[in-house]
Length: 210
Image (cartoon, rainbow, N blue to C red):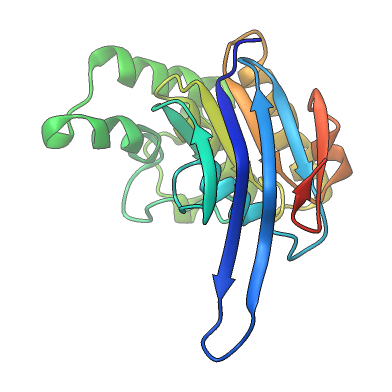
């Protein structure tokens, strides 16, 4: 099986000054195929966000190895939009970061506009994040994650800050945007509804993924 993301025996231990060592992850193994959607569930404090950060290269494991693509999109619970930038500029940020001088191609700008149109924000492209609802801001975050045509999207509680109805709309948007594409999705969530859109649901418990 071709794998877009793989881990071998990932472990993570936190050392508290003058306190005990806390072993959060214990030999986590994971293989994700292109286009596959995987949900990771578990109780609060189980280490789901830590694992996701390691998968995305935002945090180093204590042990083990991770094989990941270079082009990854991220979706966070708190949106993390730049308040001084327009909706369109926020979507283009990952592409701007990859190019010298922050310039983006005509094709990338067209893709950003197309994504925003697909999620119903065509008329909001020049608005600032402060003028949007929570659901609209998360739609912008989804477009930002997908604008560079990533091989993998990592999502950390993407509906956690939204009410149930808006959360359901975001899940539909996420499913629609990624359907029929080779982009893989790994999502950590407490939501059964969010997990239900995935092909596979794994549980992180006592530091082990199963």
